[in-house]
Image (cartoon, rainbow, N blue to C red):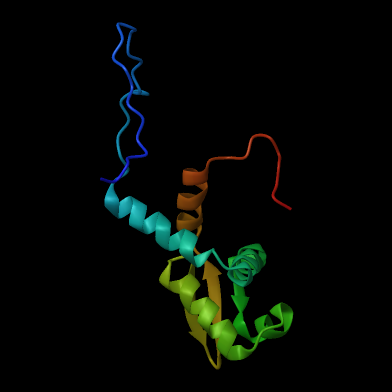
Length: 126
C-alpha cells in the first residue's frame, strides 16, 4: 500500500479563518487576450527599444530606413519585429514611396499604462 505524504489535521473547536479577500471580479477574457498580445509583443528587448524610438520620434513616427543601423539588426530582423508590434496594435504602418513609416498608437500604449498603473515611487528597472 502506498503511503500518502498528506498530513491529517485534527478537528478542533478553533474558529476557522476565511481565505476570502473580498469580492473581486475576474477580468473579461477579451481584455486579458488584448493585454497579453501587447505584453507578448513587448517581451523582446529589441521591440521595446524599437517602440521607444518610434514613440519618442517627432510626431511619434519613424522611417524604417534608419532603424536597422540604429538598432544593430538586419533588415529581415527589423521587419519581423515591426510586424510583431504592428500585429499587437502598438504601431501602424504607412508606405511612403519606397520606405515604410511607423507610428506609435497612443491608445494601445494607454491600455498598457492603465493596466500597469502609474509608477509612484520613481523606481525603474534599470
